[in-house]
Image (cartoon, rainbow, N blue to C red):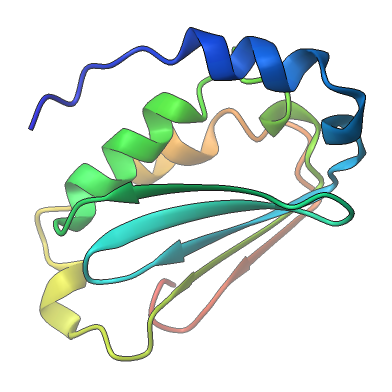
Length: 120
């Protein structure tokens, strides 16, 4: 329930591993019970946060994708999509544009942003 958390060790690990420097695109998958960040192409790195409310999903992922996470700032392509079975109420009015901006802000090198119909 606490949205304030710190993950410095994974950031340091990923920042120093050569295999992780080859990433050029990422996907964010939103489902009813979680949000998942996957980095591609060669070595796939996935991070899943289990939470059912979209506003908490976005806030939690934004904290992980903060500017100190070295991989995020170099990605050139991002796809955000949701589970096709999600109800319209999951996308609710309680999620503001500022939460989306907080999530997208660290992706400073993006050239392509893909959104599925439901997300857009």
